[in-house]
Image: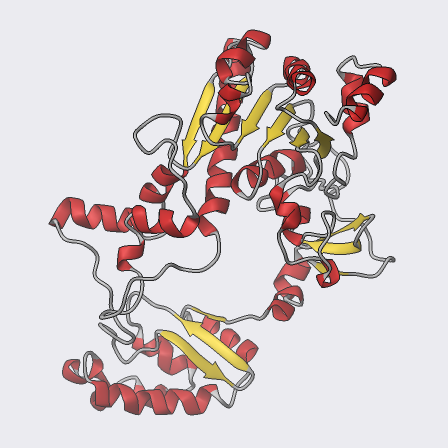
Length: 419
């Protein structure tokens, strides 16, 4: 997120009704996967009520980076991004009064999404068997490391260890060295998208049949079957009985550029599964090389390190005379897949994102006006209208009143530390 001036306009489309208007979601999730799933629901119109624990709320409120690098439960960039458009209710689910309040809210909800370990919700008296008695139409999505059943059910897990267990990490890294994981938290965000799709599918079924259901989502199973090389490795083993092999830089390549190359102001990534020599020559404005037998002879074009080094010298001379943007333009004009390695300031200034109004600007009491990533998809008749992330417990009173609590009861619950 990027700080912007107070005069900048709010993001979001005008006109029309958001796709999930009228859908009420109770959000018992925390960290990354669950909050991203419920963010997608909230930004598309669902009334998402985020239940947070008293004191510090969702653990991501303590996760950096923080606004202006000052730790604050209202200034976490991770929390602010993952919890747009939601309402925050503070509730101690371990207390009798907190459990009763949760059950009251369940009666008017369409969906519950929770990401506790499998034993937690039943131990609180809030398992699906209890909730469906309060609301037979309720859809409950449970997100956990290994699912609600099985011998691994209660195991602890991180994205790194899940990456290893799922079979993907075995093929990552350089030959002769230990395997490594690709950076950051791709799997958890991917799982959030899948959780959204699964939840909406179950909600659609409940709308048609009048009966809800429990959706059991296992991050481990998503890791085993996802598109980040795991599925590729699974298919290879299924058909050949062999594991994926790790390969070093340049292995199996022709003289056509693949990988990262320097330009005059940064780096550019080339990647082409099929060698297209004529397009490379067009890109670097060297038509004289298209039929040059020194480069096109099969024994030189593929597997000859000396000849590849010769061509790399020609390519690098051209690259270093051009900017990243110029290389992109020439490569795309020639039809050779490429992209600059953008820094974040490049991304914020990207002309394509600007033309599509991708970034949106939201005002928050703690941070002021910031730019946020925009919608991951667009519906022309159902606008996406994000609102800022809530302050901790900001909507507790109004939500409890809507559930039938009077002010004196809310004050009493506050004094007891329930809210």
